[in-house]
Image 1 (cartoon, rainbow, N blue to C red):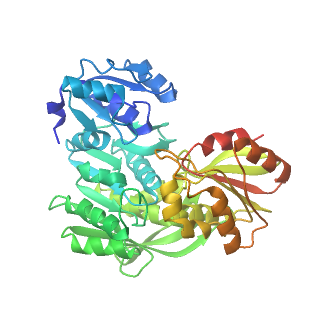
Image 2 (image 1 turned 180 degrees about the horizontal axis):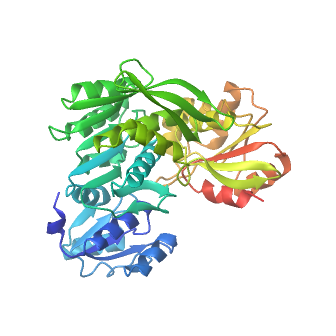
Image 3 (image 1 turned 135 degrees about the horizontal axis):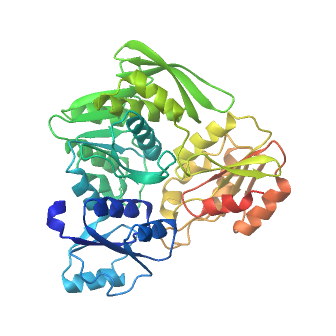
Length: 458
């Protein structure tokens, strides 16, 4: 990978409106680069970039890349994109989004990467909240909007960088970091990975990239993550509920909103109580990972415990949208069976008459590969409404659909309701007729379902 200095002066982004791409564009502009980019349609991100003086083109057209020294693109951009074709013809270097992020991270004294199949955005956001409030002035690159900064990117000092590290297509192996977090290792992205062993090997390579004096921060309750931490040959910090973890949670209990408190042991000694402000037992792991990473920057677990407790969530993570017929409506980005079950389990701890789950499966590949787990993940809900599969980057293969998932889920658990709705309008009309005061509605998915949740509320 080239260094930032080798890229040239003018960098052009294809898909500049994406949450990650727009953030990288801002970081480069702050470093003195000339930045331009294009996207399919205008958005808040493209408007913000334009206001900062970045030239933004709406629509992809040949010639918009002309004059650039390098082109940055992400996995969603096809190779027949006219600007990609034009760049190849002109001999302009093409750089993956993750490669650019890695080149930026390489210039920092300490760069912390937060990886894992589940929880990356929350753990990265918790860590970011701690570091900002402790005056560490971090530069941040997160996969979701952090309310504290009203953005997913923060241009801070030049000593400390924190980045969410995505394992899709092994993109996290393109990053450069001094410390690496593994929250968990689970089967996902099986359109790229062969199986769980292939995924585990990728995380093994992720830890192998650590410098000799780097640190691995791993979930001590996740057998795969723990094994990789123990074998990587670097200092290994563990977190979890198990005896022997560097950071250990004990005596956990939930309040009426599903938010957990627990006692934190650090290196075998009880150091402080922790009270979280985001729901779900799974967030105890995210909080401890954040506290462990913050400790490497000089923040004591007691100081960080108060700040992770003040963290109230990122956008699209158990985010309240409003009410419908007197019922609270939330949206969460959960799109993997483990994430769906965790979100529903957290919601079930809150007062409610009936818990409604509205789920939009994300990609045909994931739905097919994890079908049995999806059929069993809705159990905490009373009523389940399934929408059509969100294709994302895929084409409909014709052998998997939401009606099939509805039948399998109904056979697995006796829900009050488990039905398929062909489209947002049908689902909206149905819910407006069925949902009653005191119910709780949780819309789940990583596709367009956030728009559905926004339109659903009164």
